[in-house]
Length: 358
Ligand code: SF4
Ligand code: SF4
Image (cartoon, rainbow, N blue to C red; front, side, top):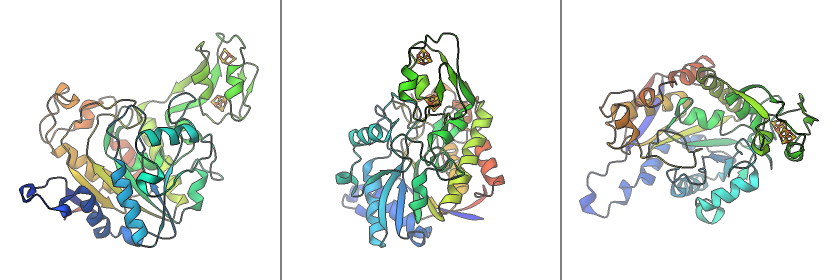
């Protein structure tokens, strides 16, 4: 059974004023060591964290990342923040240069976090490991610390460590196969303007036909002003399972991985949205584990145990009481259990866990 270490966000003795050890950053450090993540730190250490879509203001703050860089350096590791590009052509994180600019605007750059940010899937988000959807740069890491923001997710129900692996560490091809099925298709609205040919990174479009060369970046969908490129979304249950499938490829690619989940600013949606709704629960705390399934399960259990926040989506859907399944009520078309169950079947980790509060 995996161990999950937890420290609460609550500072009970705040009236003593000068209690720096009560900082959530220091608590993160304590759970990190308690969970034995220091033993994972080795050589080049990737810190995987979602840097926030422009417009989102509740992503994990750079201070958490800067602290993690400090911890890794203190252990002799060479820290770098690793990230991948999102699908599409126009939004703020769809290429390495756009993503780094968005990250800078969200407060992440070498000056603020003390380590470089490396886009491990190349300039266009399509550089993968051989035979895998994992980003190519994963192959250069000796170890990785996956820092995840525990949130809801409109298609998977919940997003945490498994989502950070299965969507955050893969190329656009990996993201495409989670969200869509089959190749994109050009319909008869196409007037052969050629815009999509200009942006396709792999010359997959011949006239008005998308060929097997397509890597599913959906740049063509984004640039076509005529709505002529069709893509088929997968149902939520398949999407959840595919997150776990992708996660298993990432776990294969990096020998040693440790996990930190922060249950703060618990949005009803993930940090890919260009906005931040009111958090659905109060801040709860920080967890550490060597098991991505156990840490996600423990995070969901803590969120469900917590009361919800009035005026948030939790109130709208009747999920204010402690003990309600928040994400099942908030995104009722989803089932957060599926990604955990699939990950468990794939041998990535286990849902049963020993909970240790420090
Ligand atoms: S951008 Fe749209 S209309 Fe233009 S060639 Fe491509 S599919 Fe056709
Ligand atoms: S055809 Fe495929 S690879 Fe080319 S732009 Fe469209 S989705 Fe991307």
